[in-house]
Length: 465
Image (cartoon, rainbow, N blue to C red):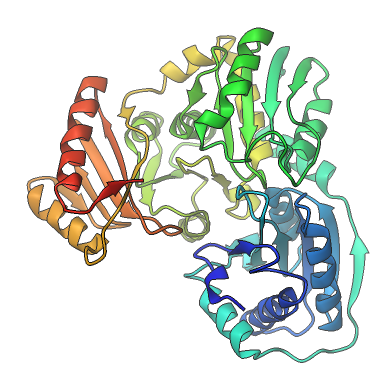
C-alpha cells in the first residue's frame, strides 16, 4: 500500500494503482479499528455513501462487506454529496460516516473521507490532526479490530430530509421568481440541486452538465479553476439569468456568479451570510480563514458579531467552529460551515441563504455584493521552492522584513498593516507556498502584491506554479 494516499484531510490516490478493491479492505478495517478505539465501542452504526466516479460502486461494495463482517450496522445512503453524508451522520444519530469520493480531483482518482460524531452532535472529520496518522499506522501494520458477528445493512435516502432541515433552520421568506443557471460538472451537486429547486417552482433552473458521469465529460469538477467556468458565464449572459451556481465534485464547495457572469469571491458570500445570521442574533462568533478577513471583518463588527481567524483546511475549520461554539464559518475556497450541521458544510443552506437575500433585497446580485465589499483581494498565487529552501525560512525572513507590522504566526505568516495585509502559507496538499493579499484599494493591492512577489522571486530557484 502506498503510504502517500493518507493525506492531510482525507485518503486519496489514483485508481487502481493507489486505491483499489484489494487495499480498500485494509483501509476500511483500519478506519473501523480507529473508530472503535476512539469511541470505545465495538459495534458501530456507520453511514456509508459514495460519489459518481466510475470506480466508486465497486469500492463502496467492498467497504460495505468489510464493515458488516466487522459487526457494523451500515446505513447505505447510496449516491450522495459529502454534505449529505455529514447530515445523515448527525440527523440519524449514527456513530460515524464514510464517503467514497475524491472530491474535485480528475477522473482517475478516488478516495475516502470519514468522520465520527461526538456528544451534542458535533462532527469530527478525521484528518492529520485528528487521527489520520493512526489510521495509516493501522493500515500499514494490519493492526485491526477482529471480525465479530451481528453486522447488517439497510438502505436509506436522506436527501429530502436534508432539504427539509435546511429550510426549517434557514427559514427563507417569500422566495421570488428567478432564473438560475447551475453547472455541477456532472457531479454530486446534481442530486440536491434538482431536489431543492423542485421545492420552488417559481425558479427556472437552467441546467448545464446535469448527468451524473464519473468520467467528467464536460470539465473537471473544480470551480476554483475559474477558467472552467467560462461556459457557465456565457450561459448566464445569454439566458439573462439572475445568477449562476457551480459546485465541485463532491459538492462540499460552492461558488456563485452574478447576473453579469462575474465570479463572486467566496469571502463576499461569507460576509452576506454572516450578516444574515447576526441580524437574527447579535454576538455570535463567525470564523474566517486567515487568507482574507477584511471584508467579513467589517460586516461582522458592524452587525455586532465576534470574528475569529482560523487556519486553512475544512477539517480544521470544523474542529475550531465546534470548539468555540461558533455559528458559521466561511473559507475562501468555497467551503461554508454551520453550527446546526455539526460544524460541517451544507451547500443547500448556502443556496437558501442566497435565495432569501436576493428575494428580500430585490436588487441584482452584483449590487448586493457591493454592500459588503470594502477590501480588494489579489487571488491566490503559488510558488515552488527549490531544494534546500524551506517554507519556514521564507516565513521567518518575511516576519523580520516586516517587523513593524502586526505579525500573526498561524498557518504560515500573516503580515498586517492598517490598509493592507497578506498571508503566506505552505500548502497542506502540494509542495508549494501560497500567497494571498488584500488592501483597501485596488491600486494599493496591485502595488503591494508586486512588492511581495519581488521578494519571493529574490530567492534563487523559486518558480511560479
